[in-house]
Structure formats: structure tokens, C-alpha cells
Image (tube, rainbow, N blue to C red; front, top):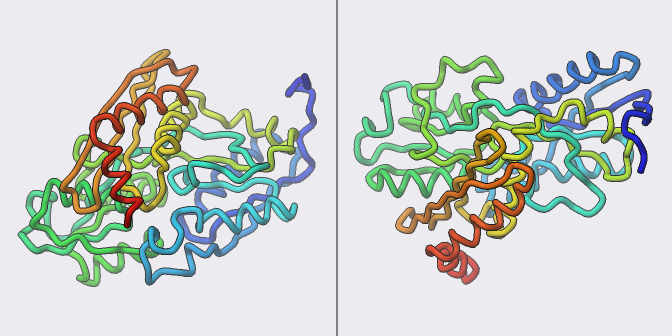
Length: 316
């Protein structure tokens, strides 16, 4: 077995990134950390536009799911025009294409959802019929379950575009990931943070992943220093849960794990889009084997009613 410490870092690293402000913040964060880690390695960012960025008039679950945000970046890796791609882990499909791997998962930012409104202090304060915008079936189903009197409407576009639609009066409130707002210095736009009990986060939410070709031992060895083991264990558990439930944009699925010493506490949720069916469960397992924990929680959710929701979804 090759000793990772003996593998020389590559002379240069090209980072493939989407061109939104948030994606570029994420890429620059990794660029700065790599420059400090290996000053002898030249690091640069290659901005790209993905199909998910171009198609903004349809919901993600109608056009192919979150993989549309990573496909072009993976093509750059495959062609050798980039060495790594930086992703928000909640945008990465549960199953990677053959020949690719996540080389590192960095320490997590706030994984929770944020309620953003210019007029109302909380979801409970919204009058019946209020329009609330979200891009996620996971959020939509949980909103409909708790507040069936609200009008949940689709909301696409980058973070700034979504905030502008709120400011223009198109919505009474919107739900966004807290991590993105905080990373871009927009924490003051957060009206209220939703607890995991109120809105269970998506698998990988708040965590950044670094993807590369599996054959790039030099890159994998270099990225290892950026991996945050507790976060990685949690995200691996969440993604295993998603894989076992055939997680995609078509399934309202929540998965959130927290490291507790040598163990991981994993919470999961499967719901119907209209919020009339919501199944929740949680398990605690060994942090050294997060994939088993995720699979076990998926089995528990299926036994408690998620299997029926999945079966109904497949018939649509």
C-alpha cells in the first residue's frame, strides 16, 4: 500500500466551480486553504455554468434533479481540464458516477433552514394564504404538514435572485439554507432559524465536498488534510440513508446527523409532497460505520410507512 505521506502534491490544482456568488465563495475558501497547506502548488478556479443554473423556469424534480448542478463539473474532471470540484454536499447525487470519489468533506457550517421575511417574524405569524417560496420538496412537504393554510410556491435561482424576489413582494417569506446566507455575509437577512424538529435538513446540508477522479492518488492525498472527520461521518450516514431510500429530488427526504463522541445520532424523514404523510425516525450508531447506520435507519423508516410513500411515488 502506498504511503499517502510519500505522495508528492501536484504542481497545480484547477478547481471547477459553478459561477454563482455562493459557489465561488466555496471555491475560494478551498483555494485559500490549499494555498496555505501547499504553497508550492499553484491553485486556480475555473468558473462554469451548469444546466441547473441555466434552467430556472421549472422545478428541479421536473428536469432531472440536483445532479444537474454537478454534471458539467464532473465532465471537466473527466477531461482533465480541472483537478477537483467543490460542491455543496446537499447538491451531490447520492450515488457518484464510476471513477469519481469525494476526497474530503470540510467542517460543516450551520446545517439548518432559515426563515426569511421582511414583514413577519415567524412561520406561525404568516396569515392564511400567504405565499412562501422554496426550491425544495423536502421543505415544501414539511411546510404543508405544519401550515396547510399557507400557499407554498416554487422558488428557483441563485441566493441573491431569491432574496430579490422576496424584496420585490412576490412572496411573504422564503426558506433558504442558513449556511449560504452566513457564508455570503447575509446572516442579518435571517428572520428565524428553523430547528431540525421544525424543518429537518437535507443530507449534506451545510457541508462542502471536494470531488476528484478516483485514480488521482496525488489529489486525494493532498485533500485529506481538509477532511473534517466528525462532519464526514455525519454526511456519510445521511447519504447512506438517502441511497437506501432511493433519495432524489422526487422524494421529500430529510436526513441530519450529529456527532456525539464516538457515536452519531441520525434523524430521518420521508414525506408525501402534500405533507399529509410524514414518517420520522432516529437511531444512534458507531461513527466508524456511518453507512450501516444510514441503511438501518432507512429500514426503520420503511417499516414505519415510508415504503408506502415510496411505492406511491413510483406510480406517478
